[in-house]
Length: 292
Ligand code: AMP
Ligand code: ZN
Ligand code: FE
Ligand code: FE
Image (cartoon, rainbow, N blue to C red; front, side):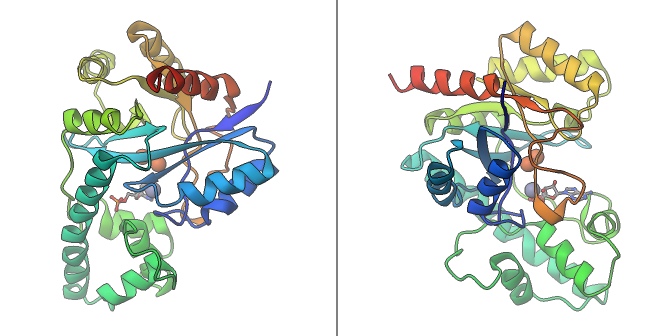
């Protein structure tokens, strides 16, 4: 029995380790497989795949995107095995980046109005970490949070979100999102398998509401559900396992590793659980069927 991690972020979005370093960490953690699932981009998958080939880790390219969902919940959809050459994928990531480009200046302007010394230039430097090649990199709130922390406006990333960046915070702005239907459709048209990420974050009020939300997504093309996740207690693992069985969904799991942007999350671990290799193998089998 070996283990995998199917949810991880790199410097291609808001993680703090380079894609190849995430792969090396997976190898060091004894994992036999890894999926990189950066927000709104597959910019890290080529580098990660090459490193995985060198060190002998099975690699699955992925992406994580946000879709519209009623407050206070958030709906994230993972797309596994998307084809980097797909025109639909390119269109989707361009649209998602445009949504961020509209939001970031609003956040920065509001922070300036609040007396915080921060500029769009600094945000870009922070996100690109001095690497101009990362032209199409999604710039997100964790990058803003890192600046606020470094300059001493807050004492932790969490405090940066609580005070300024989370809904209800002083400098919160939403970004434009895809509808769930469009998100699922675009992942499928990109050759990928759409999976509901961390269902606990839907913040549904009860099991009936959760069931309804999952059923609606299944009716729209959802193919899998994330069972193990760093936010998932045993109760949530059981809930999601039951939903997978009820709706014939693939089961996935991962840590949602972000490096030092989420210090208490270790690659390969999801709330004290490890993710069995068979979850990855089932995704690979489904992808093989899709490409036939
Ligand atoms: P964005 O892509 O700009 O909407 O930011 C999303 C990222 O911010 C994800 O990595 C989230 O996990 C992270 N995030 C959201 N809320 C918080 C929070 N309260 N504390 C720390 N990170 C958060
Ligand atoms: Zn993230
Ligand atoms: Fe997420
Ligand atoms: Fe994530």
